[in-house]
Length: 129
Image (cartoon, rainbow, N blue to C red; front, side):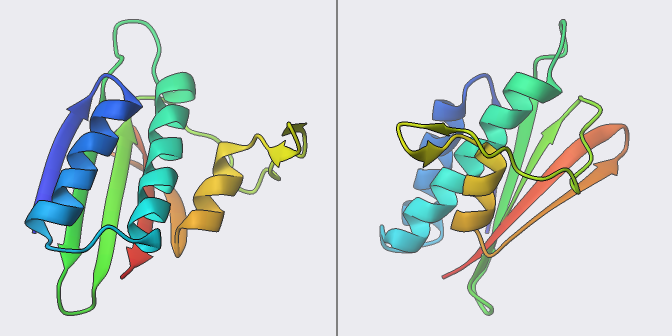
């Protein structure tokens, strides 16, 4: 089952993804579901903050769930140039918590990958349920 969204805010994407998880994919609200929402929320925030510029402030999100393998896959697509994924995570903290969105994404998801595709930067987050 798939869902697609064009986002102007990370909140909108999280609401649509929560609906996909609970209503379309028929998965219970769980720690795994919350982890996926956190990881995707960070990916959207990063895309919005770093990947959009000028009038091209559009982020696309494609989400799918394979019922057989029970793996959710979410792609966050932005028009930005991307970054070098081998760059280490930032180490600074806010109130004792790591402030790096990439760190949270990797901690909450089973896998996170980055690529350039058709002139866009794509962050793919996967989570097994």
